[in-house]
Image (cartoon, rainbow, N blue to C red):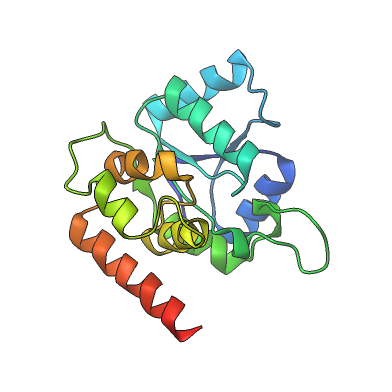
Length: 186
């Protein structure tokens, strides 16, 4: 599988794993303290070939994603679910631990960042669905993010991400229905 865009990852272990999964070029941020030189590389990549951001599904990874998105508008985003980024017998979480199949799957479900448009998914919808507040909210948001391929977000960021990726209410409701059915079957 050949990827036209340049994939932005956190480090060389991520690059090595990506190259096992797909034929692609990468830019490494080398952690969350992204210097101006790396941002300039990403800007150039975005202008010439396009960029896909694929960071670890953890707090530092989300921080890197946000930093790049703010500095380089229009990037595409690939999200790896947390459970697919855990090592078998070690602690930690990251792209470098994901299977080749998981990496390919998340790169096949890339979302293009767009200016947030008014959404028909309201904050009230999120509260009513138990995605904001309540004992199961975090688990529901995590599963919803996996199903919609938009990654995990906290309660404050969920509506913004749904808008940014222009998730349709019908897709949201379908994914939410799946989450609720899975909860009932547990």
